[in-house]
Amino acid sequence: MFLSISSSHSLNHHLTLLIMKLFIIILFTLLSTTFSSSIKAQQTVKSETIKIPVYNYTQLEPMLHPKADNDTTYIFNFWATYCIPCIKELPYFEQIGKEYASKKVKVVLISMDFKSKITSQVIPFIKKRKVQSPVIVLSDPDANSWIDKVNATWSGALPATLIVKGNSREFYEKSFTYDELQVLTIKFLKQ
Amino acid sequence: MKRIVLLITLVLAAFAGISAQGYKVGDTAADFKLKNVDNKMVSLADFSKAKGFIIVFTCNHCPYAKAYEQRIVALDKKYKAKGYPVIAINPNNPATVPADSFEEMQKRHKEAGFTFPYLFDNGQKIYPVYGATRTPHVFLLEKTKKGNVVRYIGAIDDNYEDASAVKTPYLANAVDALLAGKEVNPSSTKAIGCGIK
Image (tube, rainbow over all chains, first blue to last red; front, side):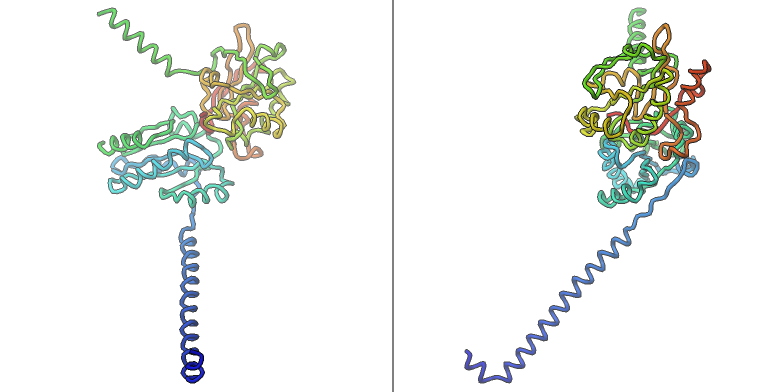
């Protein structure tokens, strides 16, 4: 073996060069793949940059009152990242929003988190849980001035849900199960 | 037939009674006997010199409750001397919210420097009687001959996020009105809070 190598020295040299070249090409390919995938990930993160609109009640109010001929069913869920029952029911709202999207159902998550916690709490929460429904923050600290406008029966406790389609609207100060929410959604779809 | 109608009426009345739980302004509030963070039982009847009470349903974990902790301490410091001490009650079930356990209440009381009793509604028996739905949720009581009458229900002030931006301190105004022998106006307000669980 050694002999044969030493005897065909020039060939061996060529082979070594070829192998080295191949190795370098493979290495570059590997490196560039890794590199590009890491760039891709960063771009995804960038494209996933979440912008949360912040409204006061006056700005939010038109959303809660769609026009009478609007046939979209809007489900507004008042929640907060720290609210345990809100977090529990959130996946059901997400699921309904997804399953009934083709039937003109739109879920809007209205966060009552403090404005100062949007960067530290709300955005990380949305990323971690991969929340798909639109999230807005309602920041209007004199809640007494607007809670009754959402619904007179609302005490102000979270979670709370408002479902609206045209002139039909219902309000619930409670936690939902998936089944309850589905029954309610179907009821509105038939209206 | 009349009997059936009567029976139906009674059943409906019973249901109406169930759905309309909780106090309204003007109702006489029940006393209670709840365990304080120092392990002693506390009742409203213990405060023989008080003119009334600022009952605050609050808890450890809720950011709204946290945002108001120092404001509640300030209210207690100001109004205890005038006959209206703060009595805080945690209505949450620790099995649902571990952060609101009695041990955690003891810690919070110490850390936040509470100057008032912080009672545990063990078994969640008191908050439904009052009709508290969230934390924080205030019931201002005035001691009268017929008992502790509810004079104000609702929010502490009009800015949960920023104490320095408060325009109307609803609760302080209500206590001031009682101290001045005036009518409380508004006698009820609403606030966003963590649902009691």
